[in-house]
Image (cartoon, rainbow over all chains, first blue to last red):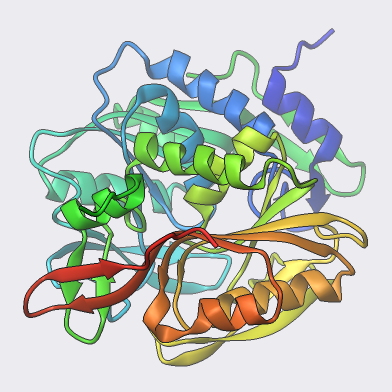
Amino acid sequence: MAHFNLLQEKILKDGVIKSGNVLKVDSFLNHQIDVPFISELGKEFYSLFSEKKIDKVLTIESSGIGIACLTAIHFGVPVVFAKKSAGSNMDKEMYMTEVMSYTHNRMNHVVVSKKYIKQGEHILILDDFLANGCAIRGLIDLVLQAGGIVEGIGICIEKGFQGGGDALREDGYPIKSLAIIEKMDADTGTITFREGDKS
Amino acid sequence: MAHFNLLQEKILKDGVIKSGNVLKVDSFLNHQIDVPFISELGKEFYSLFSEKKIDKVLTIESSGIGIACLTAIHFGVPVVFAKKSAGSNMDKEMYMTEVMSYTHNRMNHVVVSKKYIKQGEHILILDDFLANGCAIRGLIDLVLQAGGIVEGIGICIEKGFQGGGDALREDGYPIKSLAIIEKMDADTGTITFREGDKS
């Protein structure tokens, strides 16, 4: 009988599968944030990366901010969140990359101030979802532009069948996903997780 | 001699005054989030509102999410963050309000799923900034549409001279701001806080 971890159990209980391989977890992760639960995931990320030197957690607005803050609290470090467009209050001095948003079907400019990622800083990248890997590759690009070091990449839910995570693993990135979905079926409502997650 | 609280001291140390009454606090509050420090502000909000029954914390993306999560953890309740536009993954069933964004000089549609604010729920509204009060009035509108109860409004930095906070106080809302700026001067770099804050 399969043994499910904390997040897998939550997905099976509260996730809703929609057609088009959409998994809705907005009841606990990315609209409503179940803070006591997400804080447990933060502890899990801390234990997965606690042997690394982590100076900062980097994520992207908006839905990465909750898990980033609730993880960074255990490391005792700041969070930096990359922004999706440059408001008039933004610094002129920023690193910029482009990320395709399939949700909104457009290219987003994603920026981070040069003041908040510095040469030689050890960065843990965190996000709520990984599918094709575009957002994570954008964040990696920002860290590398700054001369920082990607110490780890932590993902709550990876859609394994979209291949973005495995491509990053093949490129040698230390990526850990708390739940990797291999298959999901909107008609039957079934979800199959990858065995032996977290690597 | 003036006594400054935790946030006032941090603003005096790390805030940058720009012309046009802009206070940049993106080194610790709304681009980089100084998580250990913001967690202390979360404790302060908890002590200010701990006598109220709070079912949920409501904020608005993106810069309210950090302080909301780092406060909700002390209450042991979820955060709901209102979203600025309806992506294709959003529920059709949402409450909607309009908020003027002076940063981007446009009206934003702000939405929250009907599933995540329910009739009779006791809501603590939190945000990083309050100036003219448009965003907070939008959040209040969402709570009232849902039949919820606004138990409190917590603000990190209120620009007292823009009047939005005092107008809300006159309307009877229980609003507490950790720092109220009465005056700031980009030329001299001076900031004057309201005496006897938090009311």
